[in-house]
Amino acid sequence: HTILVFDSGVGGLSVLQEIRQLIPGQHYHYLFDNARLPYGELSEAELISGCVALIEPMVTRLAADIVVIACNTASTLILPALRQCLSVPVVGVVPAIKPAAQLSKSHHIGLLATPGTIKREYTHELIRKFADDCRVELFGSSELVMLAEQKIAGLEPSPQQLQKLLAPITQSSLDVLVLGCTHFPMLKAEISQILGDQVTLLDSGTAIARRVRDLLPAGEENPEDETAVAYYTTAAISEGLTLSLKKLGFSKIENIKS
Ligand code: DGN
Image (tube, rainbow, N blue to C red; front, side):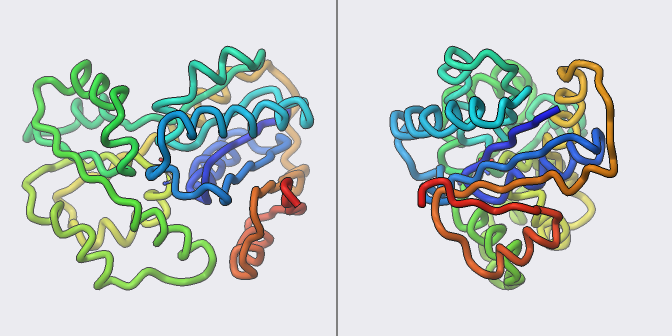
């Protein structure tokens, strides 16, 4: 099967990794809208029209069987428009508010996401629906997205900078923190070191991988075929990122706008 995973940045690689682990041997394609990163800063109209214009032709070109929008900032907004123009299943990634509310002993949870996801009506609806018995604190950060980008390109984040960005969370007494941006699982170890054992970090990766497996029609798995992984960008990428992608098994890297 052909699976297209989309994100504005490298965050969706955290989701792709979970999917590849659960269902190896598929044809994986990763579409990376780096020309417009970070999405947390774009207007809603720009986000919807730009994503649809980018994803629709790629689905046709690759004859994708399924599309995964591995970006909370986009998923909380573009899914209805995208589903309207695509005939294949579209799986979105949205913050794991429901499991967080179920897990929290103190009924005090946090959502760490992009500024776009934090202000989205979709997010507030999730909170009203699934966490109405919890105190929910919202933390928006685009800087953390950029730190995750740099990490994948080979530059380790500075503990001091992370400490500063996470300071509002360290001062809170929440016991479950939702990583509501697909970039953040890439910094999970670093975040966890700062917040300590008393805060459980939750992301949506595993649930998304299961959803993709359930939606795929039954077919052959060919774990030998793991090299069939292609990466498409909308702007040039750094040498560091190119190197990391090759290490991750991407056999083809193409700038679709050049
Ligand atoms: N990875 C995206 C998300 O899950 O929201 C956000 C990346 C961005 O463009 N800020």
